Image (tube, rainbow over all chains, first blue to last red; front, side, top):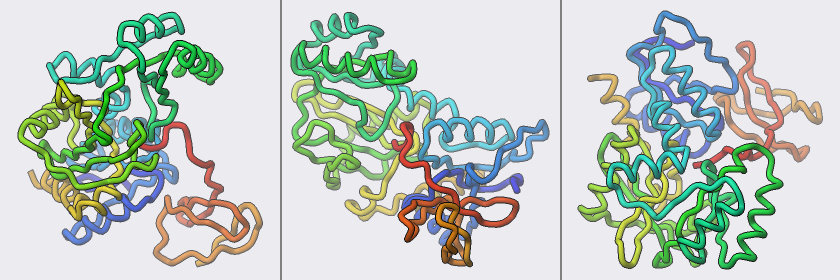
Length: 285
Length: 55
């Protein structure tokens, strides 16, 4: 039952992360309300039944995360992250657009809606370039094109993918990373922990085999990622950062429902507890 | 507690403190997810990794 002044966790799959968060809340004396979105519908009413509540959004499915957040906000809850923040972070094009307008350095990026459009962009950015969908995860459907033949092959394959989403092509310059990139976690406007994702492959997601190693965050990067989270309205995010040899830090993506099992294992930092403490502080304010 | 597998019909042993959203690998080879239904617990086949899963 959804009741006011509640701390809760909305989720679809109970992973290590969700279990760790539940334990963290309990260790702090809070028994979080577990909202398994696949078990119970959320019925919208006008009486703000969740006014004063703070809910942590942990759905693995982006669609379920957005929909359940919208519904819970409709009932008066404050959801971390908000529906607006999730929408902005989940759309790589929107994220890039917002960051760029706020002067936050990002890789060169363009959107194209045809093979010819993509070719035009890549001719300007140069080979190799990266083509990806505007929403996606775990490095799926991200392609590196090294010449025009490869580009045309990728675009032909993309043309056969179902859904309008596959008709929108995000083209990004290829950044020559030093065999790694960074994942920085921000909780409540504070940088709390970070890892390098080390890989010989250009896709460094740990889901794709990248190895997590603790990272130090200098003041410049700290300022950058805090501002990134702030302009997107996000309170708990994992921010992916490239290190360009000449331009320095470039923000790549912002993950609004971040995974952190490997980060906790690599750093020893109790991220679940930090997140739980943050949510509890919001209720007590 | 014991809950019936929707695929093979055999009983699946679950801990009393099982939570909805947990994933169970059953002996019949099916991956099942725990769901609350009408105050009780049922098992459903997990549909697998969806295109929008993950960060």
